[in-house]
Image 1 (tube, rainbow, N blue to C red):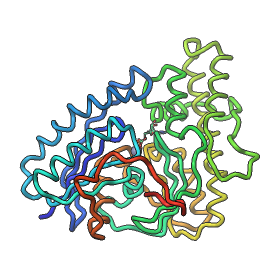
Image 2: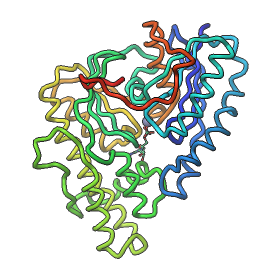
Image 3: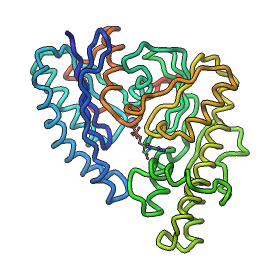
Amino acid sequence: MGLLISIESSCDDSSIALTDIETLEVIEHLKISQEIEHSYYGGVVPELASRLHAVALPKLLEKLKPYFKDIKAVSVTTHPGLSVSLHEGVAMAKSIASFLNLPIVGVNHLKGHVYSLFIEKNEKLPLLVLLVSGGHTQLLEVNSYDSMKILATSLDDSVGESYDKVAKMMNLGYPGGPVIEKLAKEGDRSKFTFPIPLQNSSAIAFSLSGLKNAVRLKIESLGGADALTKEDMCDISASFELAVVKHLLQKSKKVFKTSSATYFAIVGGVSANSYIKNHFKTLTKEFNKEFLEVDLNYCSDNAVMIARWAIESLKDNKLDSIENINVAATKRSKSGDYI
Ligand code: KG4
Ligand code: ZN
């Protein structure tokens, strides 16, 4: 058996996985999330995240000792993310590769999210992807594991971040996505009219900061977070979510019209949201594309998706050297492809 060890520590999840390089089978998937620790602050505190990774990653690695003799390659998230968090995973990956004399592959976290679609499965391409996470909102055209072109991106906040900020405004802790989705299900989506971002602009881009601000003003007009009733919070969440969905659909539709991709998918932490997902399932059908879904276990950050992308790179013999693999700045080529 030839196993690939993968490490993910780009934000607030410490995760290590073992994947069979030949069969794609996930042998182990270990994860320690830091949500509780960051919840008190209403968002991720980088220095705290880094210290928690430094404790969690060795703890997880210890559990994988029985497999060490079968490990044939190492992969690790190198970018984008919080550099102090990424450093913890990269340092561990370099030590393992150096000590066991193994090949190493550095992985772009966003490419990992795209490949979360293909865990224990073969790829389905060409693919149009809406990537919605805590750090990013992008529409991507994916033609191969190594060719992902950015078609649209957020001009300011990401979708995940806007859910987190709206939750913080109502003292609902972190992460905000799951709690806002839950409250929205009980709320009246037409109670408050929030502006649909860039509605009258021909730009194919996303913007969430104006909407976030409109929600803040509404909360203030109702007397502030402490004055809100449960019903208010449900209605604010529902009306906010409606504006988010309308915005994402309006801009994505423009890309759907010109895309010849066979498949469409939503990936990233926000793809766990069934309200958003269901609207996109309908849009996908309208354009005669096939909707691909990420298993709920792999929507949020995890090392399995990092391994899945790295296996394609290994097959292609595209490896990194221990000396050169470092936390990298996010780069984009002139053609708009990810690097
Ligand atoms: O992909 P991810 O785990 O981390 C990054 O790469 O950023 O995404 C985390 C984000 C958070 O902002 C979180 O609030 C959001 O995903 N999220 C959701 C839901 N579950 C997680 N947003 C909306 N609805 C959800 N059900
Ligand atoms: Zn992520």
